[in-house]
Image (tube, rainbow, N blue to C red; front, side, top):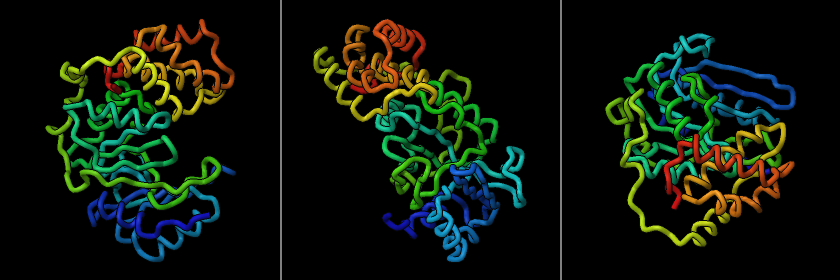
Length: 298
């Protein structure tokens, strides 16, 4: 196995938090479900001794996480123990490139501070923020998750993200968590973000585009689907299919027939595949209930 990146965790913690913050570090092994939690000052978390311990645990199959916000000193990671909101957070475990494409169409959202690549196609997107109440950031995260079809369960102010540089052992083979630093020096406040409860999808979101020929749109949708994991029964396959259909029928602005045609090869990889009737119903539901920007992936 490739070794951990010893610089990546320290750089992230120094960039993401104030030097006097206390943060929640969480270790979990999926073999037994056992969890270890520490609330420590940033200075302690970046120390050689603490980092060596994390590397040792990670090398023995433990996954390493950090809370995205700062906590009061103590032992609790409960909501009421959050001292300062440091990040707006979205998690995409289906279609990372599609989420980034959708974000690029949002004039009401600033560019992300950094993007963590937790595993192929799966992203954590974070914006550095301050002076925002936990309840407000939770409400905004819920609204954005609904509109952008990201993980609605990952909207609490106690949310964790994987610590870059360590290995993700949840799936095999294990992969090292990577990070892209984008606008990480900027810190956003409430006025820089969509107004909570205001219906955050702006009418300007659907930009004027030169329409592509239908065959080109279908081809691009098929190419996109080659990078998307199939739906699997018992693993939220129904939800995954709905989200994929939203990307295809709305994001690529396809008709129902075009969407079903584009989805055919992806559907063949699903376990089990959907019948044509079932798939058409998924497409119809995506058109009716989806919030993906129309043409947002063209």
